[in-house]
Length: 115
Length: 115
Image (tube, rainbow over all chains, first blue to last red; front, side):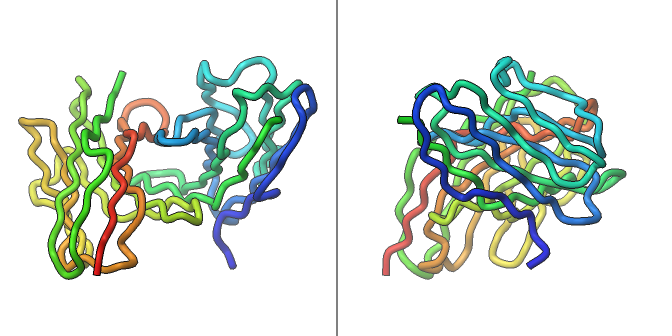
């Protein structure tokens, strides 16, 4: 399967713990996005990478959140000192750069439950 | 800032019938793209169809067509000959062609197809 891969698919943690999600984009895609989706809502943009550079961050991304994309390949999203409000589906997407339709290819998401 | 509005929380349709899912958008930018994604219960966002703001003709992809009315700022998705497998959440999204290629999503419409 050469699609966007996310791990783990499900994570249950206690409030105050740190969690990390990993995203492996489609190999030739240089753009990578993180979104958060809560129940009954559409995905909300968190952050965007072009290659290894983090070019945009939403104000939703508090200082407890950090994302990296070393070497422009896979990406990690870490949440420190988790809160119950962090419970959500975290979606990763990737796309090609240059002139194109802008279609984002999404992974199946990582569902976080904070107890 | 851009905004997407989907006013139908849920829609019901019988198998083989056509259904229209509504989407309106708001932006002052002249250049943008409009997208529809399908999200089945598995969680993955599946790209369906794209319409550019300067495209003269409405986009079509198999059973999906996009009824683009630029003056009314609407981009409704029409699914012809509904199938049971079409039951899912459907999200309308917009990307501005200025700045970075992030998508802004609406809250979605749940479509249920009955036999």
